[in-house]
Length: 314
Image (cartoon, rainbow, N blue to C red; front, top):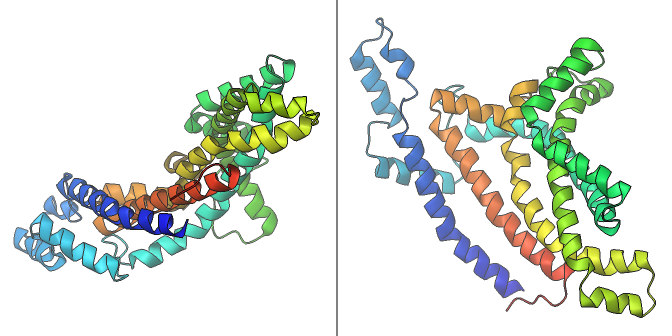
């Protein structure tokens, strides 16, 4: 297992390098630059603008800029934001706690809700419980987050006035923090739990009719033990893959939901960086997301071996 993990980490290095090159090229070739606002300002001469671009190194060829960025990033210097003039690491660390609280809670609730719903729906296929669970999953997955978010704002903020519709980081009261997080957490948890529940149900149905399940029942094992110890354990293998692909979103932000509820997370920072052509921030967010995808997929492979002892890595 140790050798397998080391091999995966070594093969991840060229993958991450290629990803960083592709993302850097896309960002660099995108129209606009951090000083595009000065181009239409008659009070700023073109020479001044070109001098600032030279000082920032933005007039150099893209390959040279990429090499300099990669060297600095590898040494822990992620650069400075063109817009806020703050270190990128500091900027991300300011936004990360909010994302971990709101998005992390949403994903945790989604996992805790979706697995029982998917299991009950599969075990009691075509029953009333299955119909209710399938309807919930269909509605939750079909409705986009911007629709459910706006709907919750209209109902719980405008009509009932129960919950604030703007997330305020200046609130330090525990009750206030909880109240302002309810709607964004509910929106994200509804969407994620719906997709996960459908996935769990499908995976359970693929396993519940297999021979090893009939053998376990023939040995006299209780239905609950057969489902919990055998069927669910094997059914979670593809679900782990889906969770591993979704978890990086906790660190990179939910762009739409953060815009609706004005959550000051990494997703809203990503939108602002795109609008301002803030290359250091864009590259750091994209590259951190790529690293998390690679690492969490490795973690998922390790979890496979824990769920199914037949899986061995040479």
